[in-house]
Image (cartoon, rainbow over all chains, first blue to last red; front, side):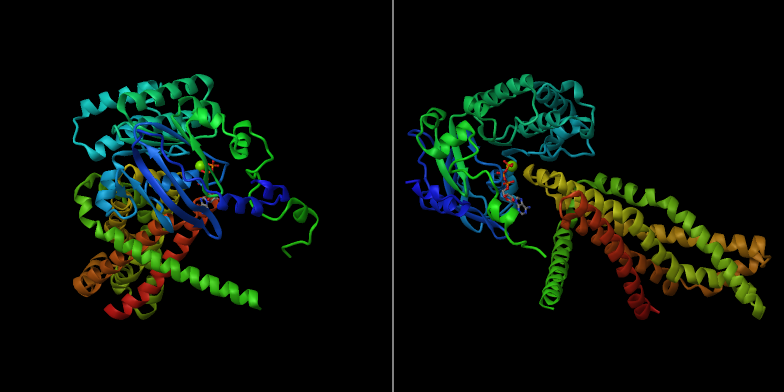
Length: 297
Length: 257
Ligand SMILES: Nc1ncnc2c1ncn2[C@@H]1O[C@H](COP(=O)(O)OP(=O)(O)OP(=O)(O)O)[C@@H](O)[C@H]1O
Ligand SMILES: [Mg+2]
């Protein structure tokens, strides 16, 4: 069935992917909080999603994986309704996020937390004020209570002592942990983490994993993790979705994936450079580029 | 040839697109006008950073422009024995033209470029996207206070520019070159009309305030989110603001005087 791939060339692979999109079904007894249906989206001429469909179970930790540049960040932005698809729909908690009016959308967003790949802290506020920001914007809580809540969250990410620093004085890993504290402060129903583990030392990594798990278990927060740290994310996920070339290639529990015989999954789990998942961004073949006629004059 | 045509077409499309987005942007920001009453402190903060911090450069420039006007005016008037009218020349030139235009240009260079760079960087570092995801409207929270601050600050700065300029003219004309101080002030008082001259000068300043802060904020939001994109947007802010100010100055002068 993957015989086409022996011809090599990214397009042949892309076609193979388009012909066999897996539309995964959630395990029995799981409710979907987010339903992604037949999502299409392009950036310029490059199609990013070609009919992406899957569900994200409520109250569970779901990891989304895929080669760099497949559109995982883009997908999170679409779930947050910052980008609109060209076709297809995303339902969060029963509401089509791209059909909502601004007010309803903002209301929904107060229940969504998002941890950006870059942290996205407000650079003119201190760490403390950054974490307090959503509380001050959306609640009328007294300052003493805000202080209490903020310190609690900062303590959980190990940065209580850094509360008076400015974001420019933080390291990348610290900034991401502050952003995590901020994403948690409103007790959202779901949190999207874009690469939470990058730039963390082994200790912070362990703490973060614990934290993510605890947040998910104690608060029943639906967690969506985009990550390349395979072992770490598999260890805390209930459900894993692998995306490539704009469609889901595999989905299931970590154990199901480990025992999957799909070459996509095996390549991804082992980290082989060669296989059905292209490592190269689509373009002319290496040989053409090096020895072929010059394309720009 | 075809290439040149293609490039021309693309740049026309680009410009029209930016023009349309710019107007949409202004419209969306103004729709949130009443949001400013929710958090007046944001406006105060912006008035400080774009108004108060621009004040020193405005005062110094105003003083020098006034002094030059005093000198030039005196040299020309004294040939007709009309140096008594120096006050009128200096004040009319400042109030009608130089104060609003030069303040607008200086404001674009000092505060406008800073606004573009700040907002461009907020975009590049995903702070704007972050605000949206925290259900905070960047139009209301970031753009509106800056726009209003520009609209309020520029006329105030222009008024101070004119006032300091008139003092500068006095310094050179009266203190150094010996024009009669009484004549300087009384002729000015007699010939400068409040509605015709002062108010129309202020109207110009308000219009420039709208245009400069609009361009500055829009260029920030519309930039390519990279360091090069931000620097280009900053340049564009200064250039487009300068052109817009000079062109509008002509239009407004033709309409009002
Ligand atoms: N603003 C943009 N304009 C044009 N193309 C973009 C833009 N942002 C992303 N892309 C393209 O969209 C594709 C998906 O980007 P995205 O950031 O979602 O990837 P990703 O899966 O998160 O990758 P990574 O794992 O490296 O973070 C990329 O191929 C990129 O070239
Ligand atoms: Mg990404």
